[in-house]
Image (cartoon, rainbow, N blue to C red):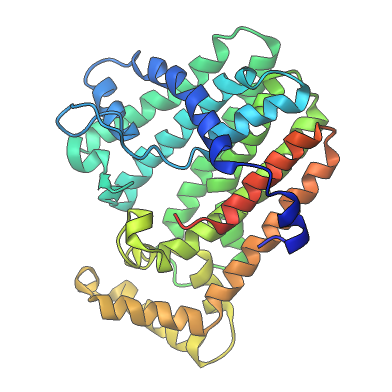
Length: 354
């Protein structure tokens, strides 16, 4: 949590309104982009975004937290531009983010996202792959059709972030088959998988508004470390989160044998709990009955992670990355109102429950 004096100073910022502004500005343009897809990909994408249900009827699904669109439109205001200037960037980042979700759900075997069956579960693996690919292509199209120098700069940053995101997913998958992963490796993976796209979201609106490279780089630094804080909180929720809030199964990351920060930090610690956890997880990797483990067995593993210090270490790491993100804003000349909103969004990331 941020220090009390800082938190008191930030109470004037309505984070819900900030998130809703990003969603409201981006959604019509996002829908228009998705409408370009050939059938049935347009319908499958609409289901993924929560606009329709599995039978094709209009729905008001949970569209996610909308942190990335909020950051993209806010970053445009760093340059003095209107928030609408950042909308193409917000849409492009959302398209890449959802491309990754469609593919990740299939690769991870996740059957639920945002309290609904995932696309591959409803429409099949082939459609999940195709629609993900289509969203990725649309992201670049949305930016490049602006036809400006700034759009070209923004596309380069998005492309770089997309490659890092894919690198992070590849690292994440490879780690699932290893007995041990270092804390440094885990942070590198999470910096790629989550930090890269949040870094891009935090700067892309400013780039579209004409910001120089120094400003864009500083905003990317903010977003990168915000992404690491975001993922650390996600890792905590992936083990101890309330399924009613997260929309995922209990002990979700443990069921997938993910080498998330709490697990890696616990295994790196000294003491009997860390040693016992290492023995159990090594045996799990060879078990033919892992899919049938009981709730109690996963709860026992979570308890060992907590006893070894993995839960506390990860919570502290989230706070540390949050602090670094806020410090990066000191390198950017921007209106005080915009700075306070960036700070409030960072605060939101480390105290959320889903």
